[in-house]
Image (tube, rainbow, N blue to C red; front, top):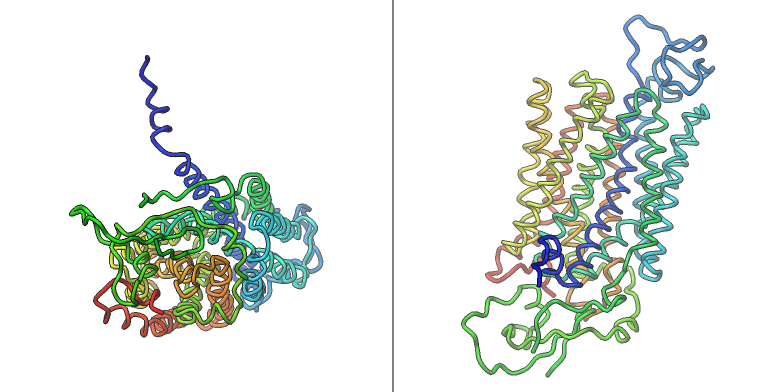
Length: 529
């Protein structure tokens, strides 16, 4: 018999379940990356919506335009000037641009609280598909304002509000789906890698929007909108919500008191022989298998069997107040509020800051701003690895927040010294700012959504995820708004605001950090009842 080709041997070296898990990992990664891809254009286009008039130049309200930036026609309209796109060509442009950010993010924050509750009661595939198609439509609608010469602030604000609402379908859906497919082991690392979709989406959004920003900024929205809608169709055709839907089984090995954890049942037997090769019990599994509330059972006692889907499905979805009573939900939610405030201020205002400080055009500033997201990829993965190794989620977030505040101060000082200094600080700031944000929205949310106090109710995950990210989105809405209000008095004041926000985020984790550090065992800042 001929030897199998290398490629075929590689394929069959993985089980059917492993291939499905890899597929769901990549699919959910791309789905949410497309959401972030569609959020980035507004920050890139800001430098085009308002242009700094040359000294001594007076705005012109009629006559031919030398640029196509004012619309597909080559004539300036009555409410149009050489200083940008009306109504953003006025002296209060920073407040108007901040209003666009605030409209989107405020709607996103309010909608997120409802989205998780709705998502628990609807099929994830249908819910996510609807959200992506609607988001693609309203992202493209913003860009159509360029082609139809729309200069009404109300049009752009309403478009942002509706887009913010429909985009809330994304996060609870993808986190719930991924958590259904992957267990708790090495959750920090897996979700740290997976959460890089945020940065990947931001980078792609910056490059796509930057390609057209100086010539036809309407396409900077229409193309990302089309991509999101296309990914929505792919979601409808291929997303598998739960491994039980295609009869995928647990990958843990086998061996009678029964404890349930949503999907799997853990059957406990008396120990017969203790193998010297047995490693330490996974700390999160240990919390699920306490026999007397103090002493964990040995791993050889554990047998993992397929879960009883009927008993799990009969459990009612958790209420909003019930989710708030889960230990750690309130602390991490408030921490994320301030952490996300910092992250989204960079997301929406960094290109304009680079334009003003380094005197680059909108396209080059957008490309340079992607370095912040590159740093964010490494920061998210690093946070996941450290939290898995130390088994302390809150302490990992606290350490990165502690380092982020002085880093932001250095960034505000050295970014004025030249391009090289800006590049270095963008990478470092991106890692420290995005690390806690990534860890809380992924691994921490999944930990809390499957907390042992829920007694196996797997319906809680989407609601818990929505509460945490919804609270964080309040900060995401406030950050860009405050930046728009504060920046006219100087960018240094914006950075002081961001440093204060980092300090507040750290403050809300103090109790959990103390609890983790005072406990000699594995991380208890989250799991403790």
